[in-house]
Structures are given as structure tokens and as C-alpha cells.
Amino acid sequence: MHVHNLRGSTLFLAICSIFESISNSNAASAHIHTHQHNRGEGNERTQDGAFSPRGIDHYVGDEHHQEFDHEAILGSIKDAEEFDKLPVEESRRRLSILLTKMDLNNDNFIERNELKAWILRSFSMLSTEESQDRLEDADNDEDGKVSWDEILQDIYGSDPQDLVLDIQLIHYDKETFDTADLNKDGYLDSEEFKAYTHPEEVPRMFPLLLKQVLDEKDSDKDGYISFQEYIGERAKSEDKEWLLIKKDKFDHEYDKNGNGKLESDEILSWRVPSNEEIANDEVDHLFAASDDDHDNRLSFEEILDHHDTFVGSEATDYGDQLQDIERFTDEL
Image (cartoon, rainbow, N blue to C red):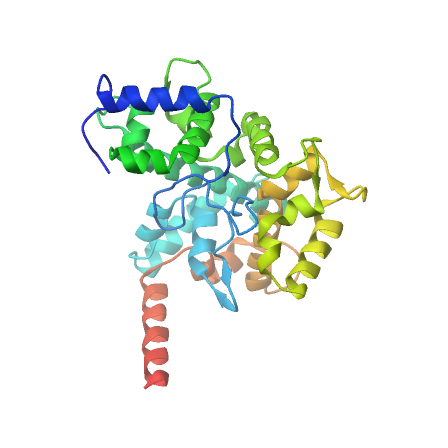
């Protein structure tokens, strides 16, 4: 959403006044508005408030989304879409070039550690691409950086009533903006803007994320999150099975030292997903799909034989169309 600049306007002054009035209060909600693109652009949250992991769309129920595999190899949604339009031979040719870059020890095999390093690199590239797209959306004056005014306009619009309704969300966003603004010049360049859009992937933002979780959840202000604080008000509307599942997750997944409360590192482990774990899962998935001789390494030939698992092509797209037709026929 693009509207006229707020700087110097009555509305801008009013919003400044609102920020001053809440600057010493805690944000009631740790939620960020985001644009909707292919995947959701960082900052998406799960039902318990944690940031969505990079691989959240890899499987939905029993359905496998091959697009995730392609993006994990290519590091770009745009490149993945381009590969889907390539003839098979051209797709294989380009993939073979990528393999030489992926093969760190130049032995013509891709070991698990090499594939994992490549996937982690791709995840970072995907976040950069997502962030750059958002920067271009918000950068009204096209100077390559974004001010807080431009973010206000792009995300929240200019209707005073909407701004008042979103005041706690705006407070949270402004806090994130200020922390991302490393040189404190009032603007976010591309690297700073990535810290704003993807704070869960930028370690210098972690103290802010921890503070915001405690502001939101730590009702007794003791610096920890108890199980009751973890489940929050939602527990009143859920059944016993939900509570048991949450208790098991709290005790065995998040409360690593077993003291009945979440401390700083445990809170971050809960709220901030681990790309390392997601990359390990993706390595397991790609090896299971293509390690034909089960020697725990992938030859270039094995990967190229399964090129449709790693990258797309016209043949992959055609296969998807056939599946859609078969599904439609079954429904009839």
C-alpha cells in the first residue's frame, strides 16, 4: 500500500505523540504484519507465537511440496520458477554447474556436510531475496533504503483509525526498526532491512526477541516463562488433549534443564527456529530420494539422474500437470 508521505503532516505528528505515550509500556502482542508472497516473508508466526521455520511448507499433511527442495538448492524463488520453464537438458546442464560449486573437495561426490552447507547458504539467500522484495515495495522514493515513515505507509496505511487500532503492533515494529538500524541514521539499508524483516535469522536481534517474548508472556516478571505462561490464555478454550501435548513439548523439547521454567536460551530455542535442524532434515530427504547405491554420498550422476528432485524443468512441470489432471478425474 503506497500513500502520500506522512513527514510533516498532522497525522505524522499525531503518531509521534502516540509513540511517546506508549514508549514506557510493554507491547501486548508480538506480531508483525507481513506481505504475502510465495512463502510468507520472515516474521510469520505459528500458533504458539514462535517464528515459522523455513521448512514449514515442505510437507502439509502427507503432501510433499517439491518446490521447497528446488528453493533449498537454488537459493531463490525466482530462479526456481525459471528452472520450471527450462527444457530438461538445459536444467541438467545448469545443475551440473552448481554441483561443481557445491563439491568443496572436488571429488565429484556431494557428501552430507557439503549439501548441508549449500542448503544453509540457500536459506540465507532466500531470506535476502524476500527482504529485498519487501524493501523495493516500501522504498517510495527509490533511494535504496527505507525510513520508518515509508514502512508505516507501506504496512499500515494512512487511516488514523487503523493506526490507532494497530498501535501496539506499530510499537513492536518501531522497536524492531530501531534495533535493526545499526548506524542509527533513521534509515535501513538492505542489510539492516534484512535484520528488520528476518530478526530470527540475525543473532544481534536475539536480545530484542527475548525482551519481546518476556514482555508478552512473563506475567509475573521474574525473567522466566513457566508452563502456565507458555500456554497463556488460549488454554481456557482448549481441551485436555491439547494441554497434554503442550505439556509434553514444554517438558521434553523446550525445558532442556528440567527445572520447570524456560530460561533465556530455552526461550530463544522455542521462539527462533533452527535452520541447522531444517537443513539436516532436508539433507536426509534428498539423500533418501537419490542415493541409489546407498553409499552415503551422492555422485554427480545420481543427482543428475534425479534432477527433478533437486531443481525443476519443463518435464517436472508437465508431471505436476498430469497429477492435477488425474486428481481432477478421480474427483469426477
